[in-house]
Image (tube, rainbow, N blue to C red):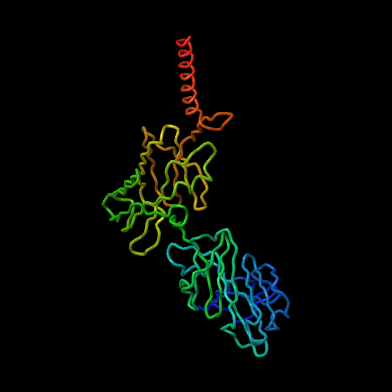
Length: 360
């Protein structure tokens, strides 16, 4: 299949057909001031693209292309292309979900010759709520195959950017369908095990034990138990609750390398901690660090909490009611030591009184 549309598609009609996917063409495009996927966008003026020394900016939805002055030696027409994500995503890697794609078509204005290399890199950026630390940036070949770009994209918050100096491929931006929680507050692998279908096993560390039934997965996986610094979860903790411990899973399909998010059978997590009590709570932690009450109440026996888990889409934190130590209203210091000191002072006073009586 061709990746690039070979005609400029403008107005209400696109290459003689309604705007959208047409035949074997994955991408459609429109030039300056034309309709682009059934929405109007501002690409700047014609003059912006016919003066090679002038800088220019193309904006379309959440995508911005910044073209530095001197990028081209001759005047060009620079077009931004976009393809239906559903078509581009047909070849996306296992465990990934594409949410944006784009390509360029650059032609010299004098002879309509395609320009495939640039004097300076243009800067692509996308600002989208789907962008996060796990987002990947792929090259898309003319045959539609994905290849991870060898230069990692720059990610800041919900914005991803990358420099581009040639348009011999197209590009796609994708997220894992399963979060990698080592990138979301649980960086430490505290224990791991290799699971073989049909054989129950367990993994344990730092007072956390996870029992994995024999039918949990249908393929061999590496099951990692993760944990983060408890301080990672203090700022977002619910009012009057103090984090006690935290954990998450990272499960890797040993045949494909893809992260596994859904389990065939629930594993049982058992957490023993001296701060766990009958008032403790069990929270789901999203990749953004938000606390969400788990809809299934945990089982708590003494200082051990247990809960079934059948997916690795969130992490978990256990909290107990925060204990606020009483302080002196005057000094702000803990009352107990002051009382202790006061008792010493009282005893000393009694001693003086007795001594006075003895002298006189």
